[in-house]
Amino acid sequence: MLMMYVFSAAIPAAWWARLRLAGDESGEKGATATEYAILVGFITIAIVGGVAAFGTALDGYFGELGAAVGTALN
Image (cartoon, rainbow, N blue to C red; front, side):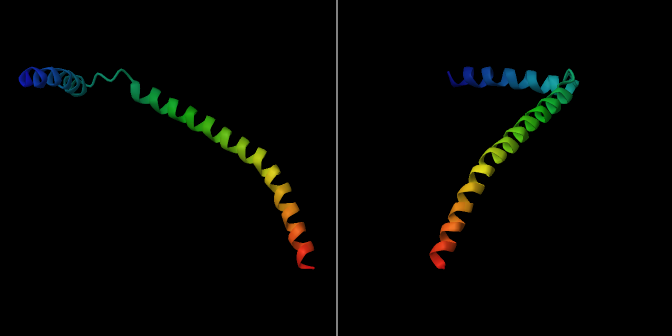
């Protein structure tokens, strides 16, 4: 039973190694880099949008907090 598992695991590994040695990548490297660049762009837009939305809310909160502390200290 163990020998059957070893051979079944070795077949996909040998197939993958043969494809890598043959250089049959089908141009996937450039497509992957483009996909990652688009993903990073969307994440950047989400971060900038979140900072803009929460930035104005936090500005108001800390403005009121500062005014309250200033009043309490006077």
